[in-house]
Image (tube, rainbow over all chains, first blue to last red; front, top):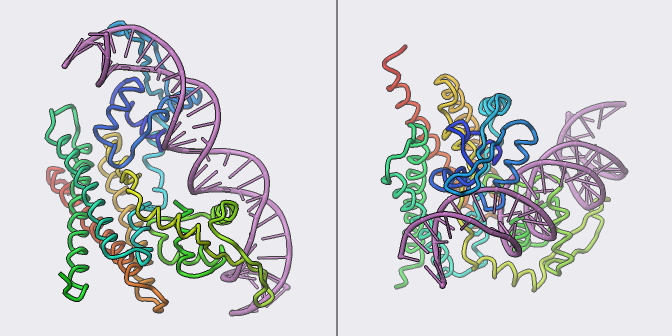
Length: 175
Length: 175
DNA sequence: TTATTCATGTAATTTGTTACATGATTCT
DNA sequence: AGAATCATGTAACAAATTACATGAATAA
């Protein structure tokens, strides 16, 4: 997966691992995060496989390794784009907890939902900042993913609010 | 994660690895799948850590290893239930493709969306079957996760249909 | 001068997948 | 008789995470 995010990023222009990381945290982060130590090894593997090539340079006295996608890399990327999607599974920790929620009390459940709501709202506001932020060279599709993110978060917030409302109604009228 | 799904399953009653797998494919599968070879090693690790214990028996001439959650396992599970949720990231392959969709043609994009829609509809109908299927001992929370799944799929279908509609409108009126 | 950002990387570990291997029982 | 389901497991591999390690340049 990360491999294709990297190749995809390099179709947008040549860049360093650090820049790919930055692009991702400003855009793809909400649907695919990457941790510090992931990009460089993957980039190296891509280079070993001839999917990207690199040139080292010094910019402002800083060492930098700029990667460029090769023809082969572009081919592999485009092939992946047309490959059938892998089985769609939404690994969602919150749902696992809900599934087994008979093990906890009502108040703990409410606490859990509220925490999750706070988490989503935090993510949504970060997405909003990106959306409203300085217009970088973001194409229509990148805007579409941002919009998906916001719509998705809106769906989740509405869904949990609704559920909370139902839960409160079902407690027999306790204050 | 799988560890907690296993512990959670065992809070519903003692069962074998095979039964846990079956429960999961009838319920949690859409938000957390597991492949064949995953459950038994995890179960073994849980036993090594004293979170579960097992008894072997022969039922209908078939060898079976039934697991039971220990007090320690129950404690670990409940502790996890109250632990703050891990950062919520929705690893969503389709969005990565959309993000880089300027690399493909309009017709390929439509094909991609249609395939994904078909994928979601297939999942939705499987969920519907489970929902409508023989009422097993499913508690309110388990029903809630099923409902989430169906609502989520409905959201996705509506979202992609809407996007497709917009895409068609923006092609300058081509037939 | 000190913290932050820029910038790259390695090593150990975790987590899970894929594919394989086995074998009994029950349904058709 | 043969296919499907029940039932458990191993071994090799893949992917990514966490934590560590380094160091220069710049902003506070």
